[in-house]
Length: 212
Image (cartoon, rainbow, N blue to C red; front, side, top):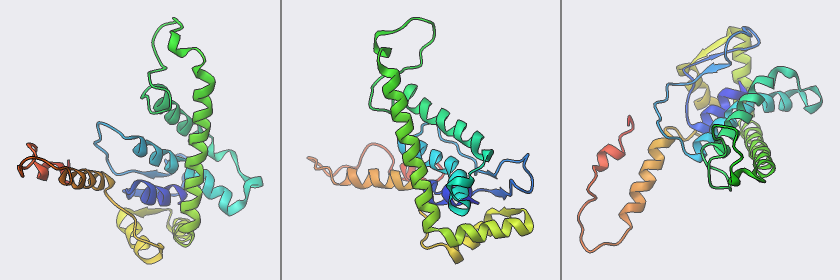
């Protein structure tokens, strides 16, 4: 339930199907809608890390820090790997460059970078975890209702989740955030002064196409 709430409010995506891991421990906690992104922004990655860590934060919120279990080990490993790749491979950290290069040669730019990158990984994970906790605290009635439904019927469809959100959430989630990003870009472009009133050479309808 915690993963689903964070997915909806952090990523703006409804799971197509939500399954109770406690009922069927061999199944993934929930299944995302299909994503066709070729490029991911820094914020996209952070939103995903927030969703991954929400299960652990849900457990902490309900049972307390002293009663956290080993159930989140896989989530912690996945989140750590994702953040590490963001910073070391994709150059999304404070240091510019790729810090995952083939071979055994110690490149000059790698010297002294390890400790700094590890520290940034830790800070990023903590921030994402805190954000997940804030979302769950704000949407606690929705979270508890979803958990109760899963206890009764073991799974929820996307349509059922949407109905629960409409009834129990404190605010409407911002969906299709990729569209919101593209709309913001177009709004910014419209404010740039120019010598003529010609439209941009690209097709605005394509940029704002929700399915693109």
